[in-house]
Image (cartoon, rainbow, N blue to C red):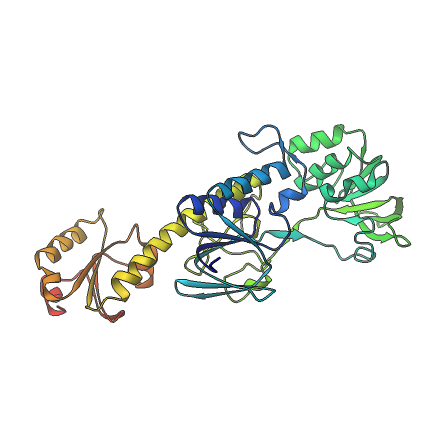
Length: 401
């Protein structure tokens, strides 16, 4: 098996799998690198999946299994490995794993997702796996017939609480907001309010978790009165947001102050050929459907990038003859006139290579040469800029030939 690919997708959640499907289907040699034993990302730890368009009845793990099966249909390769480094050297991107494996690709899609946020309160780390959990689907059956506490009030917290009620005797949600105010969607709030197994403690936070080897109590503090109370319970589930997996990217791609990857609507990072998708990207809505859309967009953009770069490398930078590059646009009459004039000059008969670049279709190359106005002509010798003419006259064009 080769370690060189057209496209490497780092992360096997819905965004990464969508990128893999679109990439492989476009005949890009595609590899998915996943740090965990099972692909599927965050949704694989949930159960219910009611809002994926066109799939009214499924579970989140089933949907993710279908994503992988779809990718495998188009010959996507899968390898397990925790990525610890990414180096970008022009068209070549080098991905290294914790075990020292090295993979090369022309383009990379970052779909590393985010991990559950920890509050760092007393007892949380000590009792992790002993009643403290961040995954209802993983641990729900352990608490069958028992009482649990859930910290959080967003979509994930409510969805997972509803799922937990299929197993537990009683569930108490600790909500930091005033009574009746939650961050989850209205339909989810209504389901939670109607669930007889769910109780709410408002204006409160969990301050400490107590237990002798296993969770026994949650210390809850009212943020308005300052009063505390101890709730007897056998488990505490945290759903209070997530932290992006981007530590290995610091200094390579641009991040927000919270560690999310900065990317535009085309999923492009500040590194050409490197894209960010899904929960790891700085965005407003984080859902399976939006992650899948991110992945599809990134793969389409990656395909265009690879084709553009391959052409440029092979036909321009490696050209034995000097190259005259004309930057133009079909919407600009002056640039179209310049193209006609250049073609009439018979440039290639003078041992030059003549290349036309549409600035609308070839943004990356246009940006690389700081093309701000058209028409512009760039003369390259041995891959380096020898002359640059903006809106040139006939005489100026002839002077560089």
